[in-house]
Image (cartoon, rainbow, N blue to C red; front, side, top):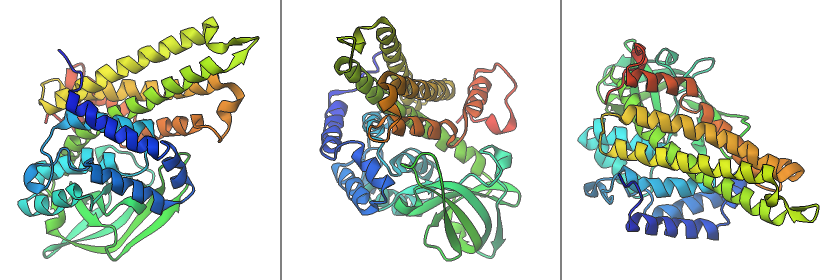
Length: 384
């Protein structure tokens, strides 16, 4: 099988890379750390104008009607620059579940807004002291006529300052249900939280007597958990591409530094220990890339092995991202620990993704269950 990207896909990658190079790559992430939110929003808007938000949206809603594989080069380029924002959550999580489970009115409203770059989604899933497992969703939403009344707290919600809507799993009649909520809805209170990855800003969201229409529910009441699994499949396939882009940048950075840094009159890249380390890093990169491409192909073609393919890619790329970001600091030596260069930014982002929307233990459970190697837990049944 040939999983290489098409000429058109690579051409679009070059447009995105050129723009991000003009924006000095990780400088956008550093602007976000420095709370220059308007500058970050400007970059995101200009990327949207290139068509990044239109790729996998049907033409009838203002999109290009392309597939999951067409997102791969875009996600890789965003991973290279650690681009702040919610493109991953919007295009690879919210969009697929709205397209598959939303009503015609919801599709017309939200997909059209996403295509126009006028809507982005963050995910308010995790609750204080709980996990991303099914039993971790405990926030209640009570039915009141044609409305739902929400009370509870969601924690570690990323980048809400850059979002328009929240995707919120809640319990309705003791069953998980997914609601789309405008972040400016009365009764919502935000409290900033500290996180080690400053390129992802976290908040705690408190809902106090928040009223929403039942038309804001995605899919039938009680089907939320299976809907989340569909979103997670798409998200993890795309996330593997984001991490491949970051890993590629790490390998290039470490290699270039090994060429220019000299010790004992020679570039350190001539020393066997560094050469072997760089070779192992390159091998990890190409393995991660192959797994990522296959995962996204399996998702696009609805292959029978899509679940194990996607979660295998998520597991390996996450571990490789963590491992290589640490190797990068070691190759740079003492300067690798300073804030002046980017090594630390990639270490922090790798650790952020390690536990975001599920940890590696959850991923192993999904992969093992889909392979039939163990009796799957109730929440890991997701043959979608």
